[in-house]
Amino acid sequence: MTTQPTAAKLRVLISGGGIAGNAVALQLLRAGIRPTVIERAAAPRPGGQAVDLRGPSRGVAERMGLMPGIRRHQLDERGVVYVDSTGSEAARMPAELFEGKGAVAEIEITRGDLNQVLLDAIAAETGRPGIDYRYGEQINALHEHGDGVTVEFASGGTEEFDLVIGADGLHSATRRLAFGPEEQFSTYLGGYTSYFTMPTPAGIRPHWMTVHLMPGGTFLAFRPDADPATTKAMISVRMPADPALRRDTAAQQRLLRERLTDGDWLAPEVAAAMERADDFYFDELARITMPRWTTERIALVGDAGYCGSPLSGQGTAMALVGAYVLVGEITRTPDQPTAALARYTEILRPFVESAQQLPPGGVKAMTPKTRTGIRASLALVRFTTSRLMAPLMTRMLSGTEDYTLPDYSAADPLPVAK
Image (cartoon, rainbow, N blue to C red; front, top):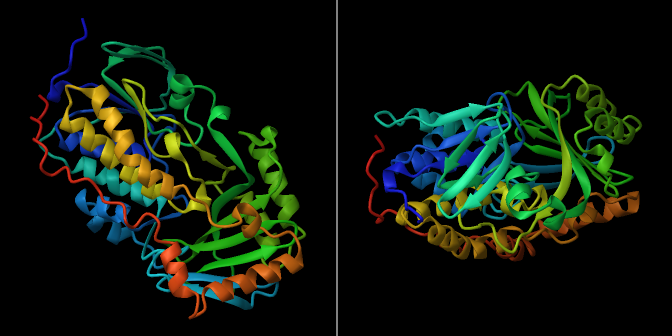
C-alpha cells in the first residue's frame, strides 16, 4: 500500500548544489523540510560569469529575502560597449536604455556570489535542523516506485526518498536516468562558449561589458568583476558540433588558442591568460526542451529541465522562478507529491516558453564570420539603440515581464521538522 509522508517528514533529495538546487533547499528548509543536497564538486564553486535578476526572478529574490545579500555583492556594470580592432568605440548600449531589459540588467552579480548568498541564507536559518550537504557525491541509479524513489549513490550507498529533484545543469544525470539520453532533449545552437578570470587588460572601460567581434565567427568580451584588477573574459565561437570536445580541457583550449592567437586587439593576451586561469569553463551552446519535467516522484528544475542557453539571458531567472514555484506547490500539498509536481509544470510552462526564446539570428548574429558581417552587426546595434527604435526594442524584450508569480504566502505553514 502506498504511504503518504507527513509534511515535516517529507524526504527530499536535491541533486545539484548550484543556484537552482540551493534555492529549492532554502525554501524547503524554511517550510520545515530538511532536504539532502548532493553536489558532484568537492565544494561550492566560486566565481563564474555575471548573471542578472530582472522581472519575475527579482520578485522571487525579494520574496525569499535575498536582496540585502545580493546588493552587497552586486556588480557595478553600466552597459555594453562594442569596440573595433583598435579598441575604439563602435557602438554603445547603456543598461538603462531598454529599462533594464537589455544585455545588462540593473542587478548583475557573479554566479558564485549569488550561490553564496543562498548558502548564507541557509546558514542563517537558526533554530531549524540544517541541510544534509554531501559534496563529492552523485547519483548512479534511480528506481521509482509507488512509495518514492530508491537512489543508488556513486559512493556505494542506497537510500529512499519521497521526492528527487534534479538541479544538476545542462548535462543533468538526473534527467538522463529518469527521462532518457540527453540527445532526446538537447538542441545544439551552433557554437561553444567559454569564460574565465584574468587580469584586467589596459584599455578596458571600467564598469562596462566590452565586446569585440572578430572574423571567423569569434565573439570576445570582457565583463566587470567584483575586483577591478580582474575581469571575466568571455569567448564564443561559431562552429559545427564536435563531441570530442566534451570534458577534454586540452582540446577546448587548443581550439580557443587557434581562434585567438592570431586575432586582433586583445585576443593574443586573452589566449595567454587562459592557460593560467584556475576557473576555466567551456561548454556547448545548447537548449533543453522537454515535453514534461516531472514523473510521479522526480522533478527537474533550472537548466536540467529547461535550459535556454546563455543566448536567452534567462538562465538564472528560470532557475529561481522554477525553484520558487516547485517548492511552493510541494508545500501546498506535501502529502500529495505527484499532484504537486503536476501543478508545477502547468504553472511554470508559460514562463519557460517565453524565457527560452532566443534573440533573432541566434549564434550567427552574435558571431559574424566576415568583416562585412561585423560592420553590419555593429550598424544594427547602433540602429536598435537609436531614439527611434529603443521603445520598440523595450517592448520586444519584455516577454517574461507579464508573468504573474503565484502567491504562496497564504499556504498553511508546515511544522518545523524534529
